[in-house]
Length: 123
Image 1 (cartoon, one colour):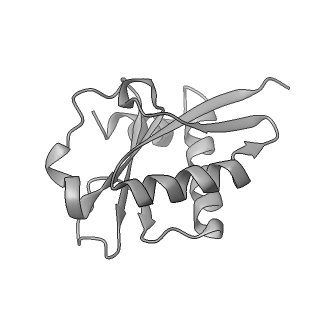
Image 2: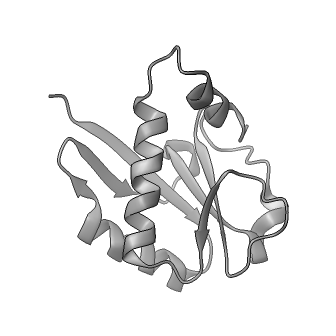
Image 3: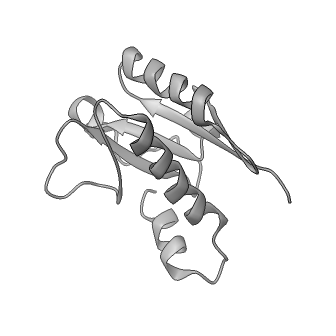
């Protein structure tokens, strides 16, 4: 089975980035799916955005086409800009569930309209 490599970037404070990097060390090796951290939004498949501090950066001009934005906040707004959410501070179980959802979207068949919509939502 082929290995799929996915990269996550984050627009957030350094302590939040450090937490996600730590979670990726623990949970990033998922068998045929490998998750890593990148500092570059342009190289990321997923960009996590702290809505409390950096919502004004949306939409992401420098992100690669097809990347997915994950909203990150202690309390989510009534209408978050993305269907993918991560609450502060993120916990291991929530993080793994998020990775599973993202993998489903990235690996979905091109005929899967839901997955295509999720990819188009961000840019």
